[in-house]
Length: 225
Image 1 (cartoon, rainbow, N blue to C red):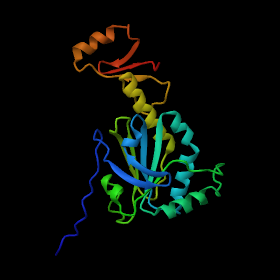
Image 2 (tube, one colour; image 1 turned 90 degrees about the vertical axis):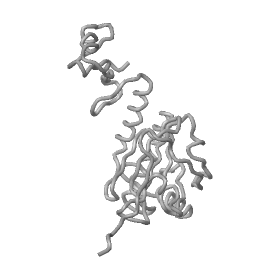
Image 3 (tube, rainbow, N blue to C red; image 1 turned 180 degrees about the vertical axis):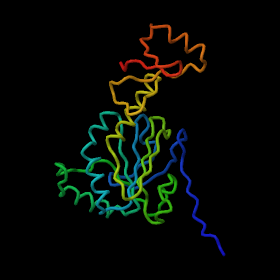
Image 4 (cartoon, helix red, strand yellow; image 1 turned 180 degrees about the horizontal axis):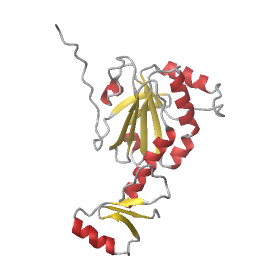
C-alpha cells in the first residue's frame, strides 16, 4: 500500500534573512525585501479574494494602516489570485461597512501570486489546500531579518491588536536591549535579561541603582522609560 506523502513545506525561520523576490502588486512591482530596507514589514497572506474572513481582515488592516506607518512599519499582502481579482475585490471593500468601518481604501500593496512562487518561499501553501495560502504573518525587521512568524487556519481571523503589539514589543526589545513579559503593553515594566549566573544576579538584586524590581535572581523588571 502506497503511503500518502505530503509535499514538503519549507519556510524561513526566525532569525533567517527574508527570502527575496520580485512581484507584481496592486501598487506596482516590488523587490522584496530590498525596497523596504530601513523599515519594519508585515508580510501576510490570505486564502482568497472575495472571501468573508479575508474581507474583515483587509478592512481592519486598512483602518490601521496609518497606525502601522507611524511605527515605521509597512504592510504587504498576498494571495494566490490575479492582479485583476485583487483590484476588483479592493474596490468592493470600499463599498462595505462593518463595525463602523466604511469607505476604506487599501493603500498597501497586495501581491499577485498565481504561480505560488512567493507563497512557497514562505511556506504559506500547506496541507489544508494546494491552491490557497494559509493565513500567515511574517514580521521582518529593517535589516530584512524574519523576527516573528504566526500561522492561522482559514476559519480563524487574526487579532490585529496582537500583530501591532508584536511590532511594538520587538521595537522596544531592540531599542533598549530588554525583553517583554506576557501580555506586555507600551508603558508597562520590561524584563532585564538575566546576567547568566546566580551569583552575579544576586549582586544585581542588592544594587538599586538600576531601579530594578527583582522577583527572583533570574527575573528582574524595570520601568519602561
